[in-house]
Length: 567
Image (cartoon, rainbow, N blue to C red):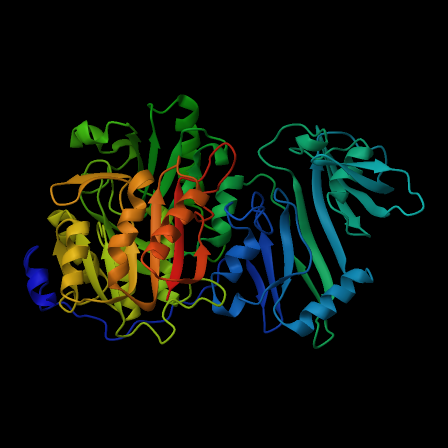
């Protein structure tokens, strides 16, 4: 069916193109990694990222993101923590021997940590020590005099420099209590800039940074120190992205995600050589200045990274009446620099994808699915959850609502054979171009034009079976064959239609883009449909939005995605 189905949507790819015979492995080394061996993983945590997830369906903490990203990090152990708003050096254990050694070193206080902090208050002395017994009261900790039975906390402070309006200090905690440095700084009349919880003046971030840590290697006994200077002037949203976006592998990601990054209703993406701004209104003067600063900052990559000069920025007005908006009105408009070409390419996980600003509301790639697409390339969904237990080569993958075939490209690059189904011939042709951009021969793969429900039924009648089925429907769709589909109401019906095509112990990837749909309801709907089909879930991994789409109370998660292995 591959040959005939491919010809339904246009001419075959030029025979002069060269296609890759075998995929190269995607090795991960995000910029935040400071050191790694068989026993230790040392990272530079950015401000604004939890050490671990605060709740089951919240955004992943750094620990969760790491251990579900690479098989070699699956056994990571948390030895110590940093507050969400604190940046700096953080050490994880990778082996049982390391965990025992590091736990003992922290317990005996033989690990030395130093912090840098900034306050807009004047220090009463150049050096001082704070000692107390912190007690939790709501979200805060209050200092109490040291007393019998109380857990003592002690921090030594030293002024590094005084400048008009600010004091920069070094803090060395001699104990390890939650919020210890923050509490003790406030006690001494030096609340940290940005730390409004403890009386600090408002700022772009909490200006507290774990600058260095010294310990003994758990196996060799060598004394090791990792040191990262504080940079409180860097844009915290950009610093966050620079911590995990890998230069040379990714140049398409979100830079500002609405209220989570301090800009309610405003979203900015980097798309290769351009910035794409999106909001319901025209840009305000403040947003325009911020966009110009961001363009300049992105064009100055960290030391050692390739130059990232941008060519311009565009802005798109968001509207709830997408179906009734003319394409010209829905397309982004130039703000400054060059206007984007009709078609251009971006890099994601080392692969190339074609984008366009001339196709109306969508540019051709949903950036919030980047981490899920990557799971095909590394054959790793989560800890103890390989996507293809026997390897991807020769596996069968079905990608419904395929759009421009982003998932299909990644699955094919890994070695699987992919069937892509979409209601748009134009998008399937776009998908075939994405195959060609990556040296992938589309001929062995199927590109099927039509309604997903109709083709699920037809493929079932042909006794087609798939090792992985991808369900990533639009929030709302309507067709003659499938009728009206609303993701909040009809997801169970979609899962039920897919179940007969999934092999025993196959994997279902389900995605829903709906802010009003709660994650718990989404998971229940999928699993109820699985149970109704007399199938059994043997493994599940809920995958929140990637960290460049941070989840917060002010900006709840819009995307719900999960992977199920089903017997």
